[in-house]
Structure formats: structure tokens, C-alpha cells
Image 1: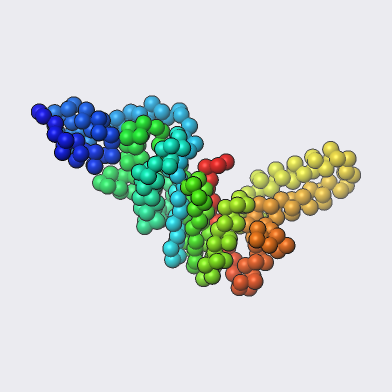
Image 2 (image 1 turned 30 degrees about the horizontal axis):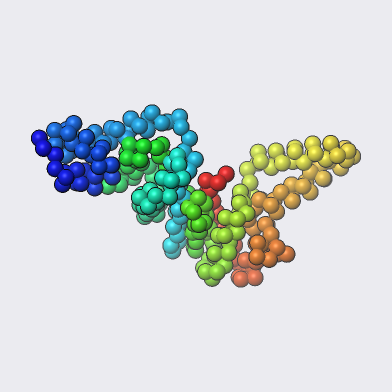
Length: 272
């Protein structure tokens, strides 16, 4: 059966695969469109399995917030060339839109949501064949608060989501979102830090003080002091505000509104 340019174009539109891949798939399927689509998808799955042990460190990180919710995702690939490609960024945006609309519970739930007659997972797997690189959806996070903002750092390698307990001026929202992007807090306040991290920091601080020759009776007090310093470095509300480092982020928020605070924080970067 003769394969026409129109047949190839139709398959390319449906799968985003390359022209030659579409032509070969149609030839293998004797012109049967549905069978050709299956061939393209199987190729993507085969390449995904083949490249499973490879590292996909590049990618695109996007976030979106509106009203009382926000979502953030990271779609990974192997090279920066692919990550900057318009079609890859567009695919990331499409998945983000699905995540934002549905607000699934977790990454696994997002992967199983419908997309173009398939699932998000299937679409991502197919991209392994279309692009020829390992492609994976590596991160999904969400916020649901009274007010929210998303910030995407230029280059699409870093994004943040911040939720607030009440409506706030846009500039204040932006300042906090960029603070989180720049200063990489691991929690909103000290209550959000896992106990194992606290225990580790105390142990490290005590060992350091001991090596410095500090009295045994003072080790716990010194360690606690250093832990408090750690809190100021890694918790958003206690960090020095980057626009005015003589005040904390908490103090900056209270200047805008005495009851204003951050309720949710999501940050993801490929620049680790």
C-alpha cells in the first residue's frame, strides 16, 4: 500500500514522532493508522526500558497558581538542548495544566490522569521514542491556601509555590516567592523540619564544639544555639529578608499585615 505525505502528517500530528519514524511505522503497519500508532508507542516504551538506567538531570520546571490553588511539576530529559525545545516546554505546560485542573493527591495519581485519550504516564513514555532520550515526570507538588503565587525562575530550572493564610498585595507575594527561590528554605518554620534533621544538626553541632575544646557541660547549650542559627538559615519565616536583611521574612509579612503568614511552601530545582 502506498504511503502518502498526508498519511505521514496525520500520524505525526497524533504522536509527535519524527517524519521518518511515522513513515516507517505506516509501512510496517501496511498503512493501518491505528496499528502505526501502536508501533510508535511500543517504540517509545522500548526506548524507555533501554534507557531506564540513564540519568535525566535536565528538564523543565513550571508552576501555576490562581485563586486558592497552585501546582508545580518537573519533566526531566537528558540534555539541555531538548529541555529548551519549544515542544518539550509545551508538553510540560500541558501536563501542568492537567495537574492544576485536577489537583491529584500525588505524582502517581497525576501519571494516571487522562491525556489525549491516554494517560499522562503513557504520553511521557511515548516521548522516549519521539525524542530518543529518557523522559520522566519526576516531581509534582501543590498548594491549596486562601491566596497563592507561583514563581518560575528564568530558564525553567527552578520554580516555587507559596500559599498564604489570607489575601495579600501582589508585590508581597512576589517577594516571598522569589525569597524561597533564592534562599532555598526547607520548611516554613522550625515546626516543619523533620526530627531526624534536627537530631543530626544537634549531633554535628556538639561534635564540632567538642573538637573546638569547649567544656563538656556547655556542649548542649552551644549545640542548641547553633541549631537556632540553622533554623534562621533554612526556615522561610526566620530567614533574613533578601531585600532588607535587617528584618526577617516574618517581620516583613507582619509589616504588610499583622496576621499575614505563609501556610504552604513548594520548591523544586534541577540545579542541585
